[in-house]
Image (cartoon, rainbow over all chains, first blue to last red; front, side, top):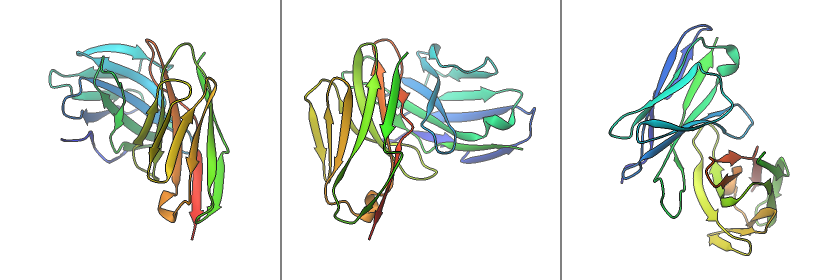
Length: 114
Length: 109
């Protein structure tokens, strides 16, 4: 069974640029959620995708957007990067409507905005 | 608004010194309470899911318990490799996960 994978591992961008982060869900999982984790804090929910549609969104501005593909992999896009966007971005997959609904996380992408 | 708090913020233990971590929550219709372990710079690793008050789960030196307002993660005779940040999260009906800030555990040899 393949776990959740994310790419790239690390990324450095400058303020105002755009970035795309990628996630492959765990085998058999159809739901992907994205989180932002600032240093020393717990993960903050950005949004969730189920069957290629956004299925819930946290308190993040529209410049944070995403996609889910037919194979359940997903992308997180962030436009007009700001310094405060520097964080660990986590992807988690789960099986919607399962009895456990447990989310399994990938290793994360460390984004640094200069 | 759903909310999760964790205490203490940081905890230092000697190897073999048992202790407990607390997770207090307010949620509209608990669908599950989740414990994760996170090592520095890595993604959270799933430990336990608890669904109803009175439920308990164990894994090696860890035991998680749940009441209607809080959950405890008991660590028995910890080892240095148990050093990590322990995250608690809740999920309510129709919503997504809300995480606490975590407890940073250091176990000294």
